[in-house]
Length: 376
Figure 1 (spheres, rainbow, N blue to C red):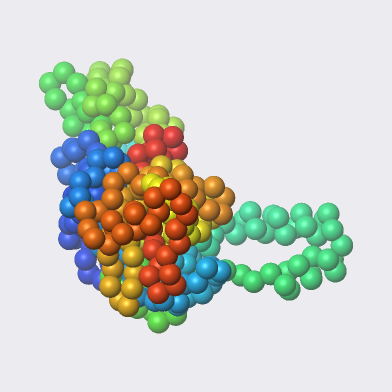
Figure 2: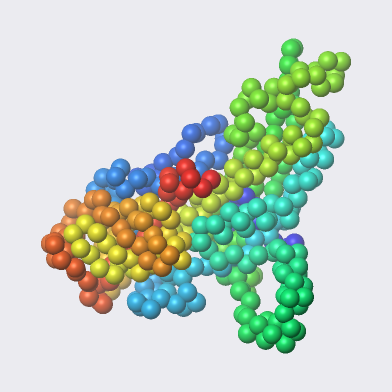
């Protein structure tokens, strides 16, 4: 179904052209360049001041009363479940009057872009990805019939439940290639622009959340300006950046698409944060009921807050290290409040668990620097 497309700039419910605003106290912009879309990187917990210890705007507290200690990933009433998404690439426009560039841009098609983005999002384990990689699925099913008896395969297929998406994410892409030649040399000018919409596949409603905005990446965002300079002789390529080589041009646009996906990921992690319930406190340490299984990343900055009868009260900011199904958080700074002080005193030198009516949760504030340094 090519109806939907994951446009790198997720524009939701008519908000595609609006500039997305993030809490400046909890994230910082990386390496600003003119009109370029930037990754939003979560501040380290060690950089927080007391005023920064606030629950992120995008975390939904409605339904927290339905979250129990035996967390069920399909319990939709609890807002801590992971959302399943299916990605579609729709319009994939090419704007170039030059044949070599146009041919290279054609190779970066919807299928290629879709599988690239699926891999990127699945890697953080924050979301459940319903893949469009039907070729691999068909090949695997064929292998199963070759290696196992038909009855066994049929029983496995009958018992398996196909994952249904909560969101269909459509992305539209515009790729443009131009050249500017001066008196002595030229410059290859490449751009990628992605815009998105998020749709409820069951009600057919275009949603205003999550709002990922529009993403723009230039060739100079992934390569130095000098490396894109070329020289011509008699209107033919002579030296420098080889725009006549399809593989060369394709490599640049492939890097630009990857950069755009990095920006999209950083926005999505702010719009749809990871979360967990606090199991216990001891001194400045906290144990959480989930880890990498819920998409909590290494050295993630998380806000601890108490939820009681609809009221949310921030307690502390912590740096989190996850294991497969749980996590340990080191509280870096306690909130300057009476409630935080009470919990701190009760956890002084001993294990303290809050009551069922005063549960404490943890929520992330964005893409951690550790992930950028080691995974992107």
